[in-house]
Amino acid sequence: YDGSCGGVVNHLHTSTMENCVNRGTVYMLSPVNTLILMGVGGIAGMSSAGVILHCENYGNVFHYGGAIGGIVGRSSGVIENCRNYGEIFDTNFRAHTVNTPNTYDLVGGIVGFQDGFDYPYRDDKRVVGCSNYGTITLKSHQSYVGGIVGTLTSSPITTCANAGDIHLYYTEYGYVGGIGGQLHMNVRFDDTTRFVTSHCVNTGNLTATMLPDGSGLPTY
Image 1 (cartoon, one colour):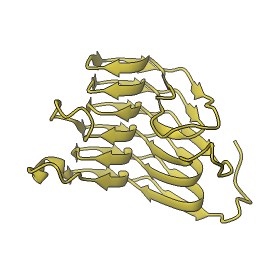
Image 2 (cartoon, helix red, strand yellow):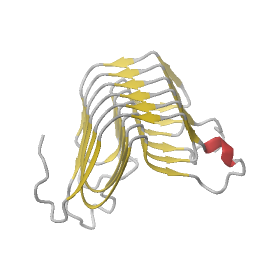
Image 3 (tube, helix red, strand yellow):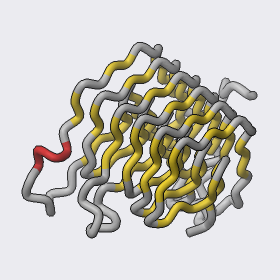
């Protein structure tokens, strides 16, 4: 991993966080060869088979590429009953070079990348009862952005709600959803009923603007 940054903890590994609150700004400036594995979140940067319960983030989260979330950047565990009120800003508008092979972003109001395929010994990975109220603004070449999760693999999302507006500006491709930017199931699992997205609501406004030459990108 290149690194990670969290408002309360950097990397949660097979442990539990409960009733934690962050009110400070989380800002991470990464090198130009940022990899998608990097995680930045209001509560935790990364969670490897960890459990995050009843946590709230009020601080704004800033980063330049990678997996970014209001609660956790990258997770392969459980996220339940968490709330994000902070705004999320991500700018990964860089020139494509041999040193920047991964110039796309995974950004979510709760979690940037929920990786249900990682840590196979934990089969209860899930995102449940979480809400996002913060605005998400993303400028990127390539991206997946959602009000709850940017990209999710082989995990269920249930009873989650997004009320935050999402503003996406991209030059090559951009996927935006009120709940998830990309929901993906890996075929190695037999019981596909475990990975249902259900009882989720979006009330936020979504905009996606393609700017092929990069001109007109907003600043903040």
